[in-house]
Length: 112
Length: 444
Image (cartoon, rainbow over all chains, first blue to last red; front, top):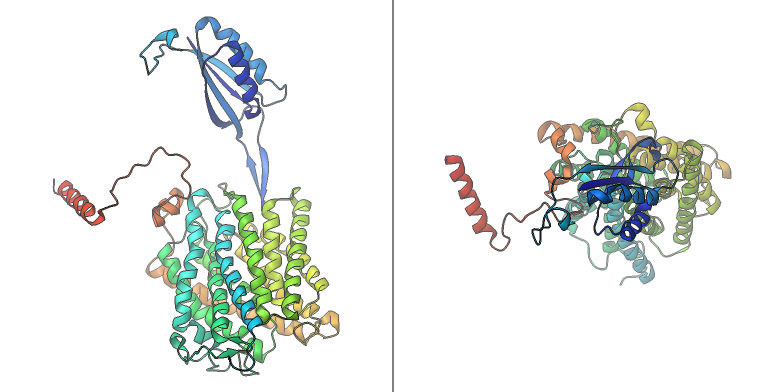
């Protein structure tokens, strides 16, 4: 199994979610995150004091899939998250040793 | 009721008193939104506690020190009304009962020390601040209110009644007084940890907007109510308050757009308050066009003045000096130019053929109140700092003053992480048991 993590623009969450559902991914975890890559932050002004806000709001999506599905899921995800503008984010995957469904105790791909 | 009583005036002044009361919680929101999450509650309750402390002191001795018959050359009232004794239901002040007048003036005494709190956000011990309020209103506000607001046919307060300094609703006694005291206190307490280095963005601009809206609303009581009668002067003061505030909002926003490229909501809220401050002394003596001019000038000047703290390195955290001291001085001095002589007062300013006389008086009033407030506030601050300590420790400040001083958090964003550690139904038994358990632990 593979854990696929995507850090993408908050706006793209819905299209990513729909694309993954259409592909047949049953569950995912979403976290609000902040960060920056090549895209940098913006400037805010409060009573004349200017602040550089480096960290930009992002959404972190995590999904665990069977090995065979991993490449295709990544492709679907990237396509759904892309706007073509700077700051679209990153997607990566790492191997997962085991997965347990808490309710039933099922293990491995059956637990996905 | 005796001859001269007016039910209309009385109703108006009582309602105005309630409006002014609302300004203190309004101010709490205005300031509370501007601090970081970790000190929100402290900021709110620093204003709120003024309602509690000053109201009690007012009936004990505050009213008589401010508005008792003059005891010494217009400097202080006598003690005839200690504990409000000798004030009957039928006693009148002008056309309203003395009780209504005392209620109205009390609300001014409440908000003035609350204004100071913004200068020392995030870092003052709550007990020390409470003590400061009690001492400051006693030694600074009550006498200065006597100087400025007590009229007794030429035998009243020395600035207002005897010297002819015009301060309709408190540009000197309230705003310069509090603004300069804020400067003194932020010098005594020192800068916040991370001043000019760490981000200190306002945590909730909607709270700031709410607060400025409540202040604007309450200010009609403050200014129009200061006519102490439901008459034309009150109507004029009401309109002047509205248009000066509007103009100051525009003035501040224009300055900000030129200097920083954006119209900010904090700028709109701050500009409104700067306009309210500046028109406070002047609303009973200028025309509506004069009020527009005063507002525009105050908005622009205060927008520039809030940067002074970065240049000179004093941490007036929420710009009490830049808005209240500067705005109060602008409004008080501009009376010397814009007083028409046809509104509530006969004195005329430079632009209306009155010469330099009134401007000189205004400058004297501004300087006297500023110097007196600065010196006494600085001494009181030092005395508290040297005895019980005024400032919290650095650890507490960094972790957030709300937890250390109030044992609360402003916002519960997550249900995770807190568990009830002591049952509420039988506090004495449980705490005794807890003490015992603690002792056993120590013994072991």
